[in-house]
Structure formats: structure tokens, C-alpha cells
Image 1 (tube, rainbow, N blue to C red):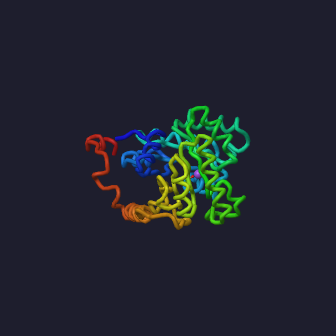
Image 2: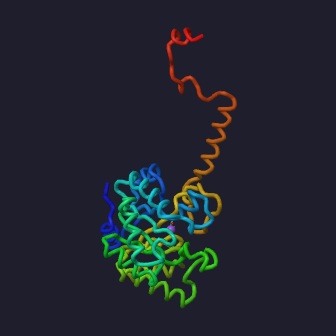
Amino acid sequence: MMKNTVSTFREQKAKGEKISMLTAYDYSTAKLMDEAGINGILVGDSLGMVMLGYEDTLPVTMEDMIHHTAAVCRGAKNTLVVGDMPFMSYQVSVEEAVYNAGRLMKEGRCQAVKLEGGASVCPQIRAITNASIPVMAHIGLTPQSINAFGGFKVQGKSEEAAKKLLEDAKAVEEAGAFAVVLECVPAKLAELISKSISIPTIGIGAGAGCDGQILVYQDMLGLFSDFTPKFVKKYANVGEMMTQAFRDYIADVQEGSFPAPEHTFAISEDVIKKLY
Ligand code: KIV
Ligand code: NA
């Protein structure tokens, strides 16, 4: 199987081959995705919501991200693993950004990091890239800015906002980002951005004109029922399967049909008799 790297991502865009990405947060799931042939895994700070049950991504810490990134990297052999930089791990200063990106790579063992923002975080993107740590940028709906945006909504609809997004995409490319996530961006704008820059765009809620796609795996598997965004396609109803399996197990335990003889360990009758 092909080993995915930042170079193969670049080559895929040049050849017009679409890049597939999903999020993952643990060893077993990463291993399944890797075996299925996914190009990239993002250990997203969405972990705060789908794994830890927070209302938004803001409480996620560097320790959380390192812990889960390391687990994913142990499961993903051929996949490019990107570790997400949590809120306040890169905003305070360029120095802190480089230090924390370094921790994600050294301790989490990922091959790249991601951070949110356009022109305003270009000093960080440049400095982290200069430290030989590849950076994926993320523009459009950037969930760490939920309080500044006043909620989760589509970005770049007005002429001014669309122009700013296009400029942000060009700025992160210029600063050295190897790819950029476009989240909740009108499809035609995302297509224009994808044609205007040479690094791959990875879309989520940004249409088929992007160079690649990413989804949160709980959303595409039908595992996360708190809410389902419009851009999600459900590839399975794993949540329903799990609930049914849990119910079947509970019923079996209650009626004593689990465990059956084949699930038990034997001991010689002589030994047991002596104990009576
Ligand atoms: O944290 C995350 O899962 C993300 C993706 C949705 C791009 O940032
Ligand atoms: Na994220």
C-alpha cells in the first residue's frame, strides 16, 4: 500500500487525484481506516465534542491531543497523520506555537499539525514550517472562534467575506502550509479557491470542487446523534447497530443465555469434587 506523505498529497493535487481524509482519535479506528486505504487521518480537536462530550472544542488541552494522536499513530502505518493544535496552544505567540507543534510531533508522533486561521496566523505557520513541521491550515468556519463568530455558520457568503477567504487561502500557501481545510464554505467559492492555489484544499461542507474531503468519522458512521450537520453523508448506522447489540447483550445476561458453554473454561471434575 502507498505510504502517504505531504509530498504524495501535493502529487495527488497535481495529478487531479482526490485526497480522502477522516478524523480518528484511537488506535483501533485508525488501524481500520489505514487498512481501508485512507490517505490522511486528522486527530481533530473535535475530539472534545465527539469523544469527551464537551459542548465545543475550546476546553481541549495539549495533553488530550498528544494522548490521542499517539494512539492513532500506533494504528496508522501508511496514512499521513495530522495532529490538531488545540485552542490557545498557538494563538499567544509564535514561540509557543512552535513549541507546542513540536510536542505534538515528538510526543504524538504525527507527521504534520493543523491550526485554525488565515493571514492572522501566518507568522505561526511560517515558523512551524521552518522548524520542519508540516502545517495544514484551516479557514472558513473555524470552530475555535465560535464565540467570535456567534455560533457555527457558513463563512464567506458576502463579497467582502469571500474575498477575505480567497486572500487567506493565498496567504497560508505563501506562509508554507502544505494543505488547507475549507470548512463550511460555499461550493463555488471553495472551487475557485482550489483553482487559485497550488496546495491541496481539503473540504468539509465545501463541495466537490475541493482537492480532497474530510469528515468526522462519528458523523459519517451515524455514531454521533447530538446533531448532524447538513454536509454529512451517513455511510452506516453504526449507532443503531451498537444500541441493538447492547440491548441483546443485556437481555442475554438477564436471562442467563450468555455466557454459553463455548464461552467458558473447563476444569477436571476430580479437582472440583475435592473442593466440595
Ligand atoms: O477537529 C476536526 O475534526 C476538524 C475537521 C472537521 C476539519 O478540524
Ligand atoms: Na479541529
